[in-house]
Image (cartoon, rainbow, N blue to C red; front, top):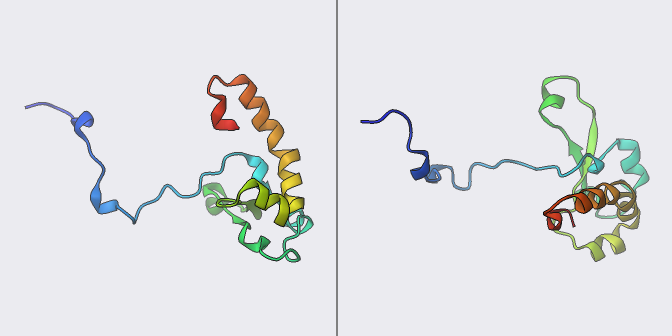
Length: 115
């Protein structure tokens, strides 16, 4: 007999397949926008943008006072497609997110993850 779990032999729980998810993982606060910023980026006037600028709530928003913010989610779109379909969003992220990513890339030994 031994005390403790054999962590090295642990395997994924198959009962959770396709029913459990870690959820959305936001990679930088630069993707969070106010409703006014979202409107300035074209939300409500640029066709299709409503699928990529969404209401955003984290745990603190749910348990305390909500910030009533939105998030830019371009998952599944190629850079070229964003540039062509949503040029304001592309420029906004180039100005707001890219400098932070470039700074991290230049100081990180594993810079490929920020490119």
